[in-house]
Length: 155
Ligand code: FES
Image 1: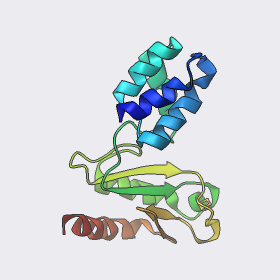
Image 2: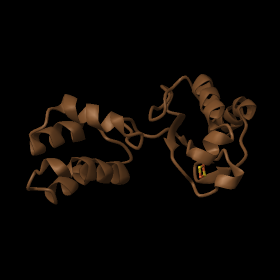
Image 3: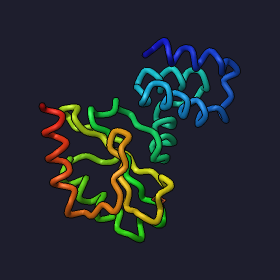
Image 4: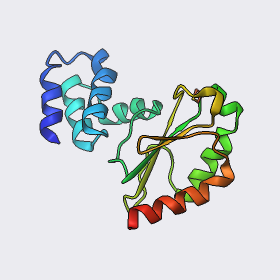
């Protein structure tokens, strides 16, 4: 994984501060998450403290700091999904998994992120589970969904 990071940094040798977000996006895309190694390397490349990089990166929902779980969920919280109840869906997911968006459960089984639109606004709330779309999801369906997914992971 470090070679992927080094390859990305190799293309941003100028070390311009405005490259911070594009570099983070590229790391996220290629490595799946922003590791501590990346943050430290990025700090020395751009002359920005690691605290500041963490502060900026956590401002954006899109960045994750841990490897994704075996099951990764993307929960839409865009305007239409919000109007259709994505808030309670997210609250239920948080309660079931005991983690915040962008985190991974201690056992490495689950992670989830919040996204702003998945292009299925009229049939939301939408959750993508390992690439498969679930539409019209209700908060009271979440415990059974997680139970089913745990069963799939363990068998
Ligand atoms: S707002 Fe959720 S799919 Fe568009």
